[in-house]
Amino acid sequence: MVAKKYQNPSGGLNKAGREYFKRTEGSNLKSPIKSGTNPRRVSFAARFGGMSGSMKNEKGEPTRLALALRAWGFGSKEAARNFANKNKRKTMVGWVQ
Image (cartoon, rainbow, N blue to C red):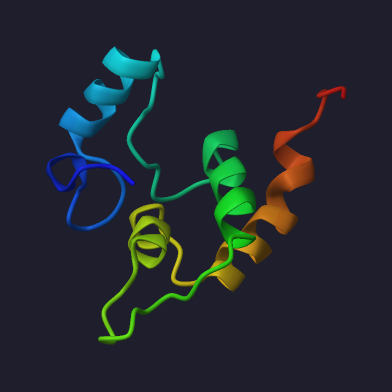
């Protein structure tokens, strides 16, 4: 769990959060991509579409999972999964395991 000051209220990390992880872990995190078939967006959709957990908490508010999906342009885990399955092959052309 990351500190509240590094969380974007609408989902994901804010700029300070991305800089914090770069400083502490050497990560090079980038901001969300809301549309298109960018390989980063397809990868996010595949990872988050398969995550366990609900989209709403006990108060009926969206969870951080739901907010992150929304920040990347997905309304649900199913929408993210479908997008990933549809676009996985197109973005991985020429990629060898």
